[in-house]
Image 1 (cartoon, chains in turn purple, green):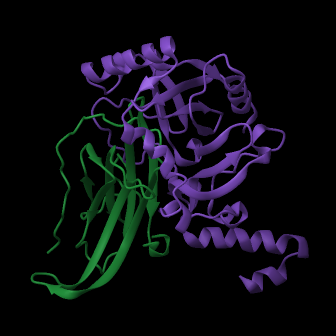
Image 2 (tube, rainbow over the protein chains, first blue to last red):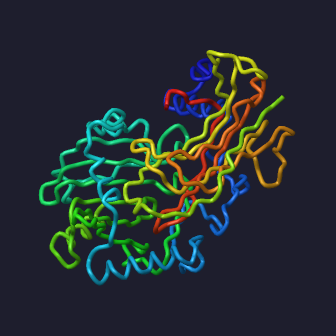
Length: 246
Length: 144
């Protein structure tokens, strides 16, 4: 390869050698992504369109009748009362993100630049958003390990006016994901794709708020400490943030 | 003789978690050779494993997952079967409630060049779908 680089014009040498390196791996992305790749589906999961997000009636989901009924009742309660019942254990999971003794801190980094080389997802910029003044506690690569890098990122932050915040983002196109949501629990559309808004509240009234939405290539999950009431200023801030992040 | 360990776990469809904090990772690894401190009675002390898994690494909380791991020689495993070598096989966890859905073989032949790709699936209380596929021809032990 070195000999070839000398025989090429200076400007072409590096790209040419780089192409040769790719070929040498015998392992290019184009070669890998094929509709013909073996894909075995669990019962009820339907056809897969990699890099797709959509919604279907819950009757076409893999959920059992009782699961579906629970899901619809929970969503009805959310819409009527502004929260959904959850266990203390469920809600305390939010606090695990801020527990510095877990792996998010031993394996994660508080300097995002240290993670970039291992990421396939391009982290959303916070410029011009509520998160621009966030203090990052830790960030960690998550998602699928594809082409030597990760398709997801989670950031754990404290944000003025929002408090404790967790933002997950997955590049579902890079991962080849196919995500389906039950139509009955879709609350609204963001970027022309289904979005959900939920407040999970334990009997002790401890709670957190969850907003899930999608862009053309990303799956976002934003978790905020406490209860955000629909129609409140905090709620409007979160929706505005969702529209702004890419 | 190749011994295949398959996790065929009964379907567990209990949804007790809001799964709001499910940050997951999914990965495949191939041709991972390790020497055991104590030899296995039938296979000796060397283990060569191929695997795909889906897991909640930071919190180790149970999720509803299913993982398939396809192990093939000489190319990608495809539906047409044109790349299937005689050694082609798939390991399937079944739907399971676990923090680590593991589909793998511990004793695939260490003298062969395995191509491993995984299919990773997940359900939450709200979503269902295909997390994606992974692929490996090496072990990536440094990742874990």
